[in-house]
Length: 131
Image 1 (tube, rainbow, N blue to C red):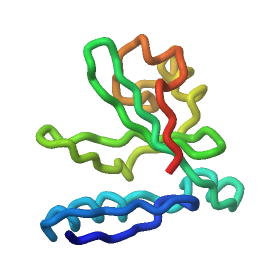
Image 2: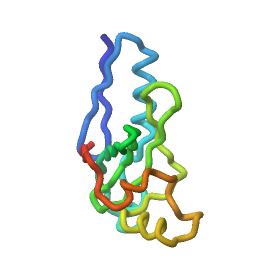
Image 3: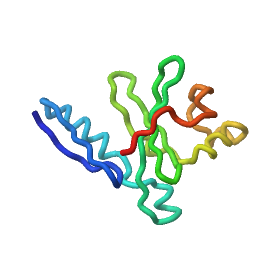
Image 4: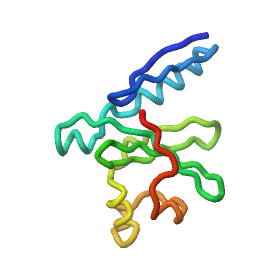
């Protein structure tokens, strides 16, 4: 068994383990793409702010994952079509829930988030996992 620990955000360590080195590197590559701090907080306040993984599930059992910092900025994670792997969308702007909601209600299409089920739009996430 190959086991490696990687620091995620400012608070947590994640242990990646597998019998196959290829699987270990695939998992490590995901965690290494995540920002160590919220890009927006670092830019606005100069603070190193930790983040959490948010998990939403809709009525059709579709799952959505986001990163959210302590100050409320969030960014979607993408999901590959095959397998269970996620990827960080580093080209997406981090915004607060209120900013996302406002953009969906009448903001410009260029500022709106990728579409998600409407019943998730007006409620907080189901699960909030600190990283």
